[in-house]
Length: 400
Image (cartoon, rainbow, N blue to C red; front, side, top):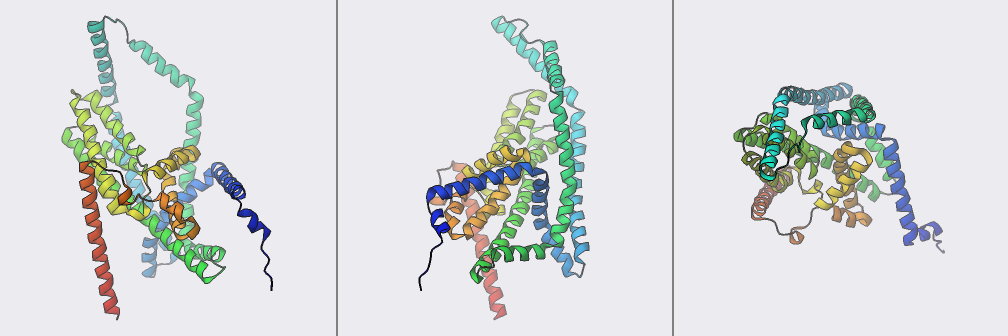
């Protein structure tokens, strides 16, 4: 009996046909992400947070709590934590705003000192006109009223999305088994092997998202303590606010830590008497980031959800181009999920490899401090793996 080949499958083996299909898929995906961002952004936030809260919801259900009530309690717990964080920032920002007059006076004093230095050393007079400076700032805000109005409109849309997130979370937690069954039937119906593969991908995605978000939260808490302690020892006012703010910006890799360190450095430059303090703050943030990138994140978040620096920067750029700041926050966990899928699908495994951490034998030589921290992190991970293996062996013996 002769077997006939599908001409469509034969055509797709040609590289330019594959390239056309992939390019069309990417263009359509980006277009949908831009057009439907008002729905996709809250849906993705709800998806990530519902996966994070699903263990709590499952624990409540194990105590005979109805699923609807368990979902509501889990969401209220998450909202309570977010409310606490928001209240903290509100009180800290209110205290920070009270010192803006001192900040402005110090800034004008520094400008005056620069002008006096230029007049004394080089004979330049009237180089800095304070009245012109104020007028320029006023004209800038007056001429950009439309931009400010658009910003307020965007803020209103963000508030609308914030209210959609808990609604989406409620339905995702309520119908999580139903949605899992839908994915299994949609992608795993061809054979038992496909079914097992899709089931493994779903379990790994759930594990990766939970480990990524919970790990990032733990790292943020550690960085907030370290940053605040460092700034408090140096003597910077509002040390807790600056430390927590810089730690929370760490959710944006590479760019976030730089943005978080600029504000306390500028504040120290304008409010403290010596350039020694901004330099010490910069050095302190640099050392803390060395520990974060070489110890805290690898040990807590884990290598399974870690993307290499090149892919992370590329994803950040793509996320910023599509969704702005929110895209920079969402794109990293999306990339981690894609890496899980690529690792499980045989034809896509090379792409999962290039997205992951660089193997130790291929890494570039690090500095002495970074190398020592990495060695300590590897030692901690090996001990944890040994402990987990011994615990699993003991459980197997008990079952036998």
